[in-house]
Amino acid sequence: MPTIAIENFAVCTGCEVSVLDMGETLLKLLPQLDFVHCQVLMDRKWFGQKGEKERLEVASADVGIITGGIRTEEDRHIAQELRKNVKTLITLGACAVHGGIPALANLSTRDQIMNTVYNTPTTEKGVMPGKDIPPLTDRVYAVDEVVKVDMQIPGCPPSPEVIANALTHLLQGKPWSLPERSVCDDCPTKREKKAQVNLKRPLQNPDRDYTKPLSEMRCFNEQGILCNGPATKTGCGGEDKVPRCIKANMPCRGCFGPIRAGAKPMVDMMGALSSIGLDPKLIEDRMAHFNRYIGAHNNLRPLPKR
Image 1 (cartoon, rainbow, N blue to C red):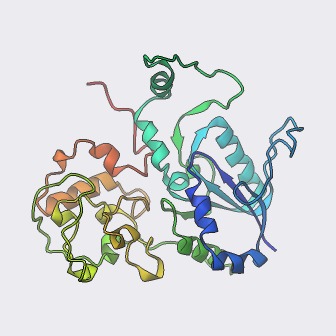
Image 2: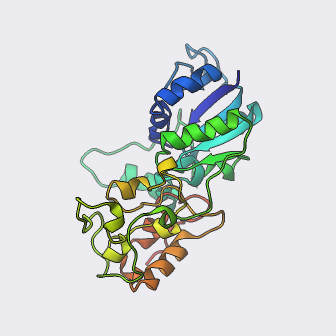
Image 3: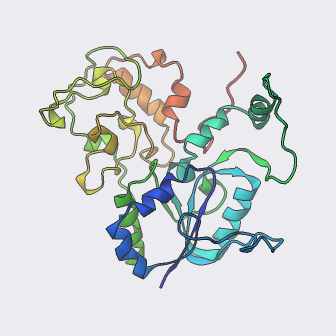
């Protein structure tokens, strides 16, 4: 029976909850899997169950799964040890695959972050931590920037269906990957390749007749509601294919990351918006907006002083 070890770093643990949300599918998979380390499923500690050991012990398993980006030197050490201890290493979720929301910190240096948190004038002065905690890395790293990764499952969080599909392929010894297509390729909304109005404020409700299907609604971008679909990998909709956020009347936020390795969503999005007559220069925080979930891989760096 394959053994599985799940480690989580800089993450909200929504990815682990998605594993639990597989529901009946998880119940079918459990007899085929043996979890040897997973903080949301079992009580297994790094320094012994009673903290009696001096050295951190990383589990050995057939399959290792990492959620979260690498933010501390301890994360880096565990990732390197887990890589040595497993046959197959999977990154699960936007944070592990591309840095995720924590990688927005890459817009600032480590010293700037620490000074903002602990030295900003306040009624209660903070104390800069200096011992008994792992030091921060210079920036947030995606896991594949530190160790070799065999399979990547993006999303914030990944849908339970996508996780189950990937694990089932792995158990059957079949390769698994998402297609190099964009969210727009699976989006059912109506496109006329021309914006109706200029960009609106984020999260405005789309103009839609809810008595009619999504295919009768005009594209979010053409309604002036910023949608990262043109530059984001599709697949979040599973077998249904309709992207999850679009189905919930929300524009795509980009959590599945670039359509292919090496793509630059910011450049692709600015081209897509310009092609329908929108001015991307009106987006004040476009660097952060277009790289919201993909700030690792040097997509985000400290902004120059003005």
